[in-house]
Length: 348
Image (tube, one colour):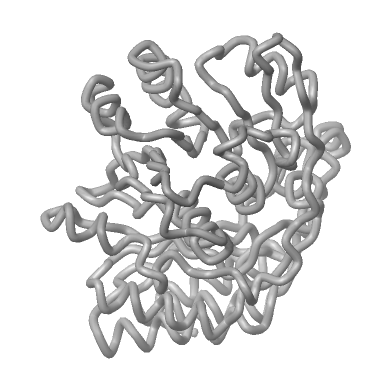
């Protein structure tokens, strides 16, 4: 890489407003934190403030014009505006490298080709875990040796489609840096002093299930890896110290591990001590009854979360067979329902 040239990196993770709050762009933040830690010459990269909310296309393009490469975090709710921004940016300058990654990116080679063919403004489509492809793209940006980057698809100048298979998952999450603790979000918060923020937190990544209607388990290879609990506690302290009211926990099955009780108690203690956060929203598992009952009692008693989801998958047997799932036992379902009603009434 040419160490004399500063590379401007544009970042886009557009979310919606919830009660005057916007989520800090966690997915992009995680990638930036990982890259800064692992790039040999990280000072040669200037990461622009991420675009985190819907704005006029022309304004977004003006913000990104100085970038050499722009990464879009692509979800079903922001796909259309991402495409519009990318198209308009390419019209201004075809030299911009545009990368789309995230859950809304297909993974099969034929699907990737169709996606790129339908959206010619996109240069690279990244699928699967984003940290390693994000890092490798930046490491190869000078020479554009995209063939060295795993988990991407791209079309060459000769109109040849190249598909690089998925990389292996990161297997040591204890070494993953935190965008909160590493100061990734500090410039964004400073630049928007009137903005109220919500936070996303990930205590583990992955899902052990293979539901046909959900790509989570397949995308993470049905393995669940844990983040370091001390890092999680420090992130909760950071969130409290920044007076952030709402935390959404990204775990697919919170309550799967006994340590989740420690995490909930930490959040509850912080609320009592600092007043923040005020809400801790989780997607709880159903298969560890003692753990989730205790978790919900702690959340309810501290006012962090009043509701709990114990939905059935389907009442149609053929549907259950097709989606490769089964419902929890009716007696168990009734027991959980009655227990949570007691908890919510503070009578347990």
